[in-house]
Length: 523
Image (cartoon, rainbow, N blue to C red; front, side, top):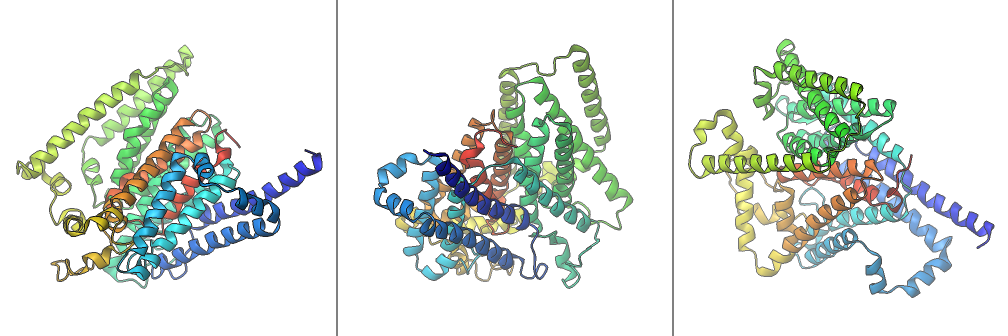
């Protein structure tokens, strides 16, 4: 092939990558920050913003292939074979396509085709939006040129969102977002993302990415940058005052050792992260004491930790161990001492024991009827209709509705984003005087709307993506960091909604993590 031909191909590839690079910034950096009328139309505006950016990006790529590369496009269409296409797809690609196909079947067979397509009776995650999620994933994973600085800019946007949220904790309302709101609503909306549950879901992703990059970065300046982002994230996720946060943090701190405990450096970084985290909690405790008339206060599961009267001794102990460990490594010069899988096995055993302990407590609380012995914690351990701000009531009724569905509907669901329609009659005149248009559990919501097949395809897609990321972890720590972001999102999804406020970032990161150029480290 001639030099001119190679240059022409490179120019065309650069054009495609540039278009997609702008799109990645528009969603990764711009999307979390954009607002129009404060919290009054935040969901619908971000939905329109995402759709506009994605449709524009796809139209530009399609236009390029239908004009600038018309011969190539026609040839590709003529040569297209299903078997050949499938053979070039990864497991992740196939299950994402299967998830979309089941959503399509669910929409076409739904009693509410219009509502299932647009999602207008729920939170807009109908077939239309699901289609653009899938399109964005394939465009980015196939044609985008990976660069690590995109992740850094996503963290900058995340830190900005977090800082805004922290000022809301101090009741500053610096941009007057809350001024027109009813007083009883002001505490449940924050930053540029609206509801505190949505906010902490986003912050969980950002905090996880920053934490992993801090733990693995070798360059000092970048390590400090990731450390600052991580600290801001820790403050923000706790000050978000949402119980969803502890699921994200439990996933992060529970699974991070499996990634870090292969050597001395990783184990020490994990201890430093723990020390920083508990230091942040101690600082928040002091803030709540000395500025109690100026802050929202903590009304979540973190009260259990903050209420621990020996917390400051734990912080001192952790930093003392970190200091002694650092001095020991400095003298012995064994910074990269390998532990193999020994520490990981020990950690997995500890996690198994902890899991069995949690199962026992749940049994003791819910089956044996000993909830009283757990005091304040029983609010989180006893599952009834009141659990999780009426999530128990929603889940019970949702499961009952699912059992009543015909076999075909159980397989493909009632239709994307038709949860509220399905439960409308069953929850009419409910004691809480609320309309339940979401399960507040992404997996249960998916089960009812796109069925067993759709839920299975979705879960396998997430698991396949995480597996792919860690299979490449030696080459690209940014992809491993993204995997932890997805893990934290998936953990909090058990008690949260799939919304076009945070979920677009999930699909963006899956595309970034699957980009073919991300297999090797690029700066």
